[in-house]
Length: 99
Image (cartoon, rainbow, N blue to C red; front, side, top):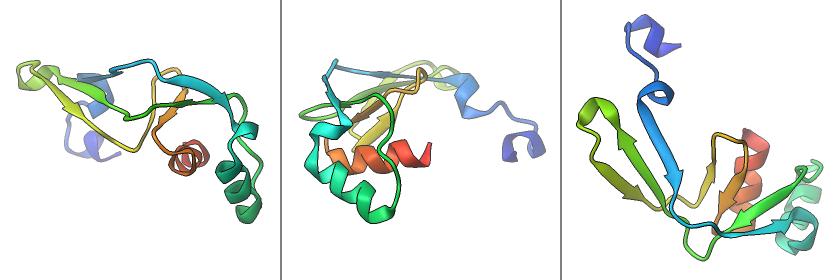
């Protein structure tokens, strides 16, 4: 790991990220685009649900840089509990399959 080589703490140890708003849980099977893409890739749908947002927003706090929160709008995010959040089902699927 690069952090080990440089004798630095990994970002996961110094940065806190929280999803700003709840979103709504939707089973993967109920999203035709995700079903089609998973089939095209020859991959099974992920277990559980996608937390679908109208506009996904995450709040990032970097304790090493003074702790000032900064808001970002990624298209997909996998939180610490493993829940996949996205504002687009296909991008959520890609995030779920790559985590």
